[in-house]
Length: 109
Image (cartoon, rainbow, N blue to C red; front, side, top):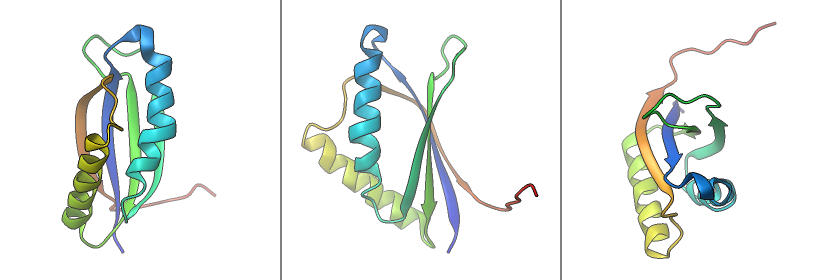
Protein backbone atom coordinates (compact mmCIF):
# COMPACT_ATOMS: atom_id res chain seq x y z
CA UNK A 1 0.00 0.00 0.00
CA UNK A 2 1.36 3.42 -0.94
CA UNK A 3 2.06 6.02 1.75
CA UNK A 4 1.26 9.68 1.28
CA UNK A 5 1.42 12.98 3.15
CA UNK A 6 -1.30 15.58 2.73
CA UNK A 7 0.17 18.90 3.87
CA UNK A 8 -2.19 21.78 4.69
CA UNK A 9 -0.98 25.23 5.73
CA UNK A 10 -3.53 27.34 7.61
CA UNK A 11 -3.95 30.45 9.68
CA UNK A 12 -6.59 31.78 12.04
CA UNK A 13 -8.23 34.84 10.50
CA UNK A 14 -8.83 36.46 13.92
CA UNK A 15 -5.77 36.51 16.18
CA UNK A 16 -7.92 37.35 19.22
CA UNK A 17 -9.73 34.01 18.76
CA UNK A 18 -6.69 31.81 18.07
CA UNK A 19 -7.25 29.67 21.18
CA UNK A 20 -10.79 28.92 19.97
CA UNK A 21 -9.43 28.12 16.49
CA UNK A 22 -6.85 25.68 17.89
CA UNK A 23 -9.46 24.04 20.14
CA UNK A 24 -11.74 23.51 17.13
CA UNK A 25 -8.91 22.29 14.89
CA UNK A 26 -7.49 19.84 17.43
CA UNK A 27 -10.71 18.47 18.94
CA UNK A 28 -13.20 18.65 16.05
CA UNK A 29 -11.50 19.02 12.69
CA UNK A 30 -8.66 16.50 13.05
CA UNK A 31 -11.02 13.72 14.24
CA UNK A 32 -13.46 14.61 11.43
CA UNK A 33 -10.70 14.32 8.82
CA UNK A 34 -9.49 11.02 10.28
CA UNK A 35 -12.94 9.51 9.67
CA UNK A 36 -11.93 9.23 6.00
CA UNK A 37 -10.68 5.70 5.22
CA UNK A 38 -6.96 5.77 4.44
CA UNK A 39 -6.19 8.73 6.71
CA UNK A 40 -4.18 7.14 9.52
CA UNK A 41 -2.59 10.01 11.47
CA UNK A 42 -2.86 13.78 11.80
CA UNK A 43 -0.23 16.03 13.35
CA UNK A 44 -0.23 19.83 13.66
CA UNK A 45 2.68 22.21 13.94
CA UNK A 46 2.93 25.92 14.71
CA UNK A 47 5.36 28.27 12.99
CA UNK A 48 6.49 30.36 15.92
CA UNK A 49 7.87 33.11 13.66
CA UNK A 50 5.73 33.18 10.50
CA UNK A 51 6.70 35.71 7.85
CA UNK A 52 4.07 38.19 6.74
CA UNK A 53 1.51 36.51 4.51
CA UNK A 54 2.68 33.01 5.44
CA UNK A 55 0.69 30.37 7.29
CA UNK A 56 1.10 30.05 11.03
CA UNK A 57 0.02 26.40 11.23
CA UNK A 58 0.78 23.22 9.34
CA UNK A 59 -1.30 20.05 9.44
CA UNK A 60 0.37 16.87 8.26
CA UNK A 61 -1.97 13.99 7.42
CA UNK A 62 -0.52 10.54 6.84
CA UNK A 63 -2.46 8.51 4.30
CA UNK A 64 -2.14 4.87 3.29
CA UNK A 65 -3.93 4.01 0.05
CA UNK A 66 -3.41 2.51 -3.37
CA UNK A 67 -5.81 5.04 -4.92
CA UNK A 68 -4.99 8.57 -3.72
CA UNK A 69 -7.57 10.16 -6.03
CA UNK A 70 -10.38 8.03 -4.59
CA UNK A 71 -9.18 8.70 -1.03
CA UNK A 72 -8.96 12.47 -1.56
CA UNK A 73 -12.44 12.49 -3.13
CA UNK A 74 -13.74 10.61 -0.08
CA UNK A 75 -12.09 13.25 2.10
CA UNK A 76 -13.72 16.09 0.14
CA UNK A 77 -17.11 14.36 0.40
CA UNK A 78 -16.64 13.80 4.14
CA UNK A 79 -15.68 17.44 4.75
CA UNK A 80 -18.60 18.68 2.64
CA UNK A 81 -20.92 16.78 5.00
CA UNK A 82 -19.13 18.28 8.01
CA UNK A 83 -19.46 21.77 6.49
CA UNK A 84 -23.20 21.22 5.91
CA UNK A 85 -23.49 20.14 9.56
CA UNK A 86 -21.78 23.35 10.73
CA UNK A 87 -18.54 21.68 11.81
CA UNK A 88 -16.15 23.90 9.81
CA UNK A 89 -14.84 27.00 11.59
CA UNK A 90 -15.30 30.47 10.18
CA UNK A 91 -11.82 31.21 11.57
CA UNK A 92 -10.07 28.89 9.10
CA UNK A 93 -7.94 30.33 6.31
CA UNK A 94 -6.21 27.72 4.14
CA UNK A 95 -2.98 29.05 2.63
CA UNK A 96 -1.90 25.96 0.69
CA UNK A 97 -2.46 22.24 0.22
CA UNK A 98 -0.18 19.63 -1.31
CA UNK A 99 -0.03 15.84 -1.61
CA UNK A 100 3.28 13.99 -1.47
CA UNK A 101 3.87 10.31 -2.17
CA UNK A 102 6.53 8.64 -0.03
CA UNK A 103 9.52 7.61 -2.11
CA UNK A 104 11.99 6.61 0.62
CA UNK A 105 12.26 6.17 4.37
CA UNK A 106 15.18 5.81 6.73
CA UNK A 107 15.56 5.51 10.46
CA UNK A 108 18.65 6.65 12.29
CA UNK A 109 20.26 3.80 14.17
